[in-house]
Amino acid sequence: MMKNESRFETLARLARSEAPPRVDVAGRVIAILSAEQVRLDRASDKPLMWLAAFSSAVAVPAAVLAVIVYNNWVGPLFEISQAIAWVTQ
Amino acid sequence: MALPVVSGRIGSIGLEQFWAGLVRAVVDSVSVVEDRRPDAPDAAEFEDVRQSRQGDSDAYRRLIERHQEQVGGILWRFSRDRLVHEELVQDVFVEAYMSLRSYRGKAPFHHWLSRIATRVGYRYWKQTARRRETENFTIEEWDQVPDGSAEQMDPSEAASLVHRLLAQLRPRDRLVLTLRYLEGCDVAETARRTGWTRGMVKVQAVRAKKKLEKLVAKAGKGLE
Image 1 (spheres, chains in turn blue, green):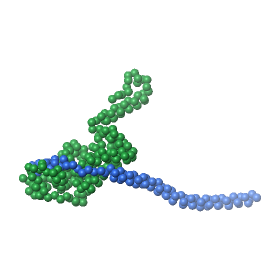
Image 2: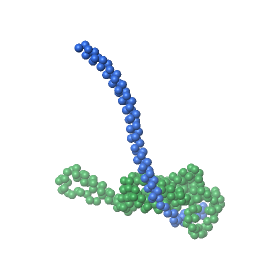
Image 3: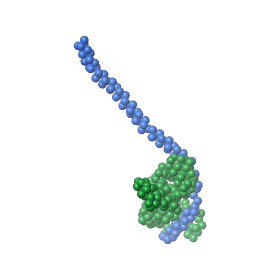
Image 4: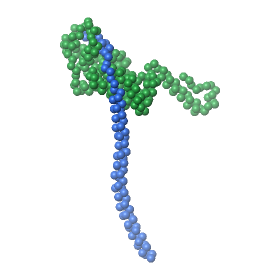
């Protein structure tokens, strides 16, 4: 057991002195982060676009409904006012 | 520590102003003490961190260039495949940028990065373990290492052998032995990097060593 342990420790100590390969990731990391930023900017616009679309979708039927209600409401009133005008003549 | 308390002046300035000054002075003195810690980050580096948080890519590039070698050294223990190794280093800096706001500047930046690097490397091991991608290791290689002249082995060869041997263990066991023996971390440093308690590190290290011994014994004539 000791033999294996000391062999392992010797190898590990040797391994510690190994020089790792050089890396240069600065350019790629900055590119990834820039792309991510663009994606996030686009994603942040999406809720506003959905809100605008939803508002338009609700506004058009509401306007149509408002015209119908206005006509139904104003029609009988107009008839009554006509009748009153005829009586008073 | 310079407090703005001068006897006789308290009455002449408003009580509110006095308390505000007192609080400011205490805060300043605390930050001065923290800045003077021997392991505190240097001013230029902290300035780069601050500018990076505000989106300055040149500042972050400087930080990467300053620390990529050290991070590369840590991750070389996690993968000896050059492509994977580079990807892992890259992941560390992307992850570090995403959590840059959590860096408070109380410890050197490279300490903070080494924790992230360990986490990224450990995650990679867990993924490869899930895919059951184990590296080849034969007991013959282990037995071929001469006891007397192991010291004369090429460091790269030794590292490769230890790496493949440890790859036979579960990621958790592998992590603790890698940090303790390959990175040369003491118990406190291992605990800091892994986020485990010191007691847990000790227990895990003993267990992992036993498992390693069993593995060598099981694979062949390992025991004396």
